Length: 88
Image 1 (cartoon, rainbow, N blue to C red):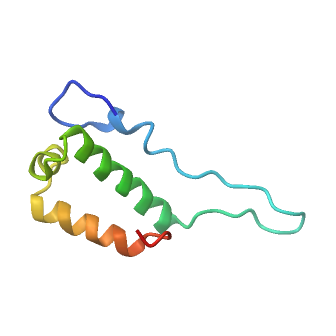
Image 2: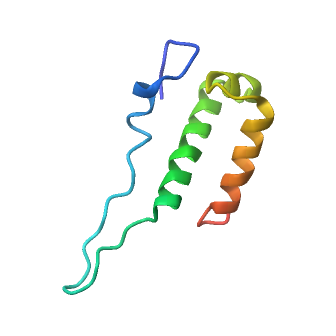
């Protein structure tokens, strides 16, 4: 994600916010979809990681760019680790 601005705005996230699409399954079965909670967690995880990358690893700057405090940034990252389907 590239931006010339010190703050990330909605257009900066158009690529990262693409959610998983549904896949087709055999006839008579509902298509598989990621649950809403998992999709939202993945979107937030990508946003936080991207903000951290833009801030060159500086958590305080990444948090500020997202309009939150450093402690909130850490809490969100910890909460997202707990929801990870991959046990990250």
